[in-house]
Image (cartoon, rainbow, N blue to C red; front, side, top):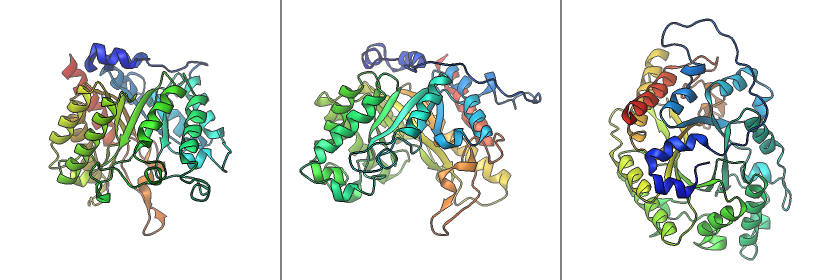
Amino acid sequence: MLSRRKFMSCGAGAAASALLGGCAHTGGISSPRRSSVPMPPGLETTGEQSLKAHAARAGLLYGCAVAPKLLSSDAAYTQTILDQCDILVAENAMKWAALRPAFGQFNFDQADALLRFAEQHQMKLRGHNLLWHEALPKWFAAEVNRSNARQVLVEHIQSVAGRYAGRMHSWDVVNEVVWMKDGRPDGLRTSPWLELIGDDYIELAFRTARLADPTALLAYNEFGIELDTEDNQQKRDAVLLLLRRLKARNVPIDAMGVQSHMRAVDMPGFTGAGLKKFMQDVRQLGMQVFLTEMDMADKGLSGDTAKVDAAVADGYAKYLGAALSDPAVTVVLTWGITDRYTWLSWNKEKKVAEPVRPLPFDRGYKATEAFYAIRGAFDERKAGRA
């Protein structure tokens, strides 16, 4: 694995290449790849033409968020992940609500299953997440109070990160704690954790995670910091202030997770100037940057499928063209691999799932225009490093 010390000493550009050595715990043999009919030049999507292969040549790890139960129920889903990914992250299986069925109890079945899958197929695994204001179990409000919140948080991180110590690429230790609308001068969200513990809960989480797993890279993960808008800039400023405070106190934090949930309708005028400056500032703190939850929502687009796909692909090309220009970026994950299971399909107003096309593979596991846009951005990154 690329150590934090090595990252800071060798520089982010060299570190991006070294990261591919990673810390994945290997075991077992990869499943045989499915045979396929020869494709026209440029349309093959597996083997050396997969996303993971193009990413690796650009000094990157590519992967996606995974639902462990689908690995045992959808063979096409599993094969697509094997074909395309070198790193995985649990979509929901490592969140508090999934791990904590009752106060004082843990259920690691799905998280363990995902780790076994990753190790069997020699993939790296990210943990998501150790602290968040959402996805808390139903018992949380009744059982956790000012007198025990600190102990509950510490014991959770010790139990979860400690269980997988030495076997994880990285953890999203703290997730989404900046929220400008709450009006605090420091930009922190008035979450249950802030109210029950105080503003040192973030530092507590990172220090506990480092003690529980000395080898995993520890990340802060955030959304709404990607666009060239005033509100995104204000949030970037607040996040950078938080990172600088943590670094000044020698808090163990190694990476910034930029979630990268994007909308294609926002991308025609996108330049990425603010994002690029932010990533430069993060790199100067000695930190890596992970694109942790990338997708490109097609909401608001009109026209036939071809026009929608073209707009989504163009959005990916513009976003990744900006983001991957910084050598601090070492990991790229999409939030899912196929439109069949994307969270973006769920229409809360209508309470139904609707067809959407935000990911590299469609509902039938055919590569979309987005696939080729992502792969092309990896190739541009490679050319820029040559």
